[in-house]
Image 1 (cartoon, one colour):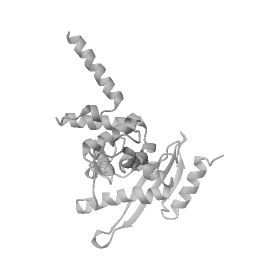
Image 2 (cartoon, helix red, strand yellow):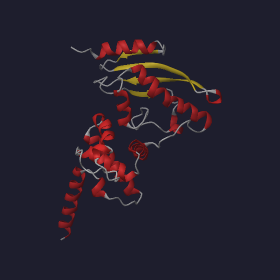
Image 3 (cartoon, one colour):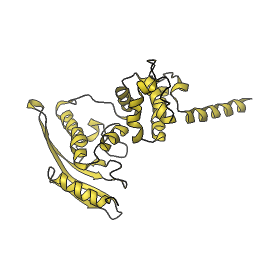
Image 4 (spheres, one colour):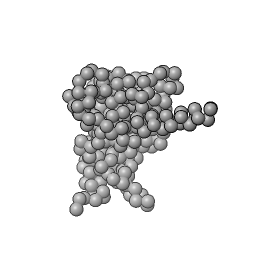
Length: 250
């Protein structure tokens, strides 16, 4: 029998407290496990050195460590000026699939804090002091999500969306021509990239991301090759709605 979530968290929090002594493990009446307390850091060199601390609430999902924790900042230090906060109030540590992919490499609280949370907090403190982030900053929301996939696949926007369509449709035969447009077979081109992120997000989640991207392009008045970028399920629903509309006009 595998270790329970309590056993895993007690061990991982104990290890994390050696570096971050001001955190504590709590269990709420509803059964939810959380780590609360102050996380401090000293990062950078010379004039770029940042020393700061944040009061955090780290909430663990019921399937932890299969899924990463969700992090909230408690004192309003992140604020609207930084902008990387999700609608639910948790910190946007990156594209959701990338957060899950990186966490899956270790499934460890201390590494999650040091490698994913503290870089976010450092960037927030740096921007508050200098008015900019110390490294490349993706935009927040759907635009930033598309920027992430463009960078991950190293392709322009439409080609990145065509690759995402493979994941949304769960259809990527290795010998098919790669959607990036370079002419090679998928297995020799972007197949490994698709395989790297496919386990960390459901088909419906990829579909929802593509739908939000398509909606953004439409709102901006940009024409898309929709048949090539829209997931099959959504395309069928759209065509069905169009046929009904045409029948009503007759």
